[in-house]
Image (tube, rainbow, N blue to C red; front, side):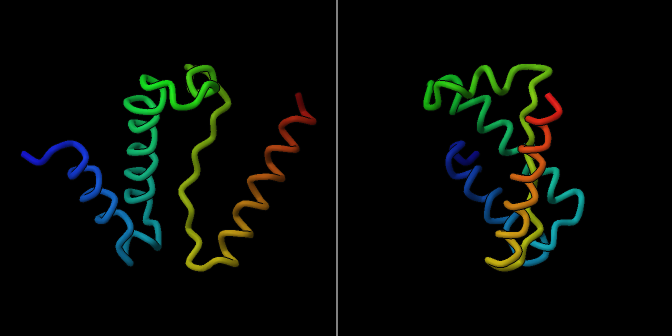
Length: 93
C-alpha cells in the first residue's frame, strides 16, 4: 500500500484530470470530501490554522465549493460570487 502522502497525490492527480476538471457531480464530491478529510486529519490536529477547529465544528457555516472554472477568468467569476454570498450572509446575520 502507498504511504498516505502518495495516495493523496495520486487522488489529486486523478481528480484534476481534464475529465474531472469539467466537474461531474461525483468528481466534485470526491474533491470536497478529500478537502474535508485534509482539514480534519492535518490542519486541525496539527493546529496549522488557529481558526480551523471552530470553523469546522458541526453546525458551522463552513462552505466548501468545487470550482468548475476552466480558466483564470472563470476563477475570478467564481470567487466574486462566493464573496457576494459571504457579504450577503453577513448582512442577513
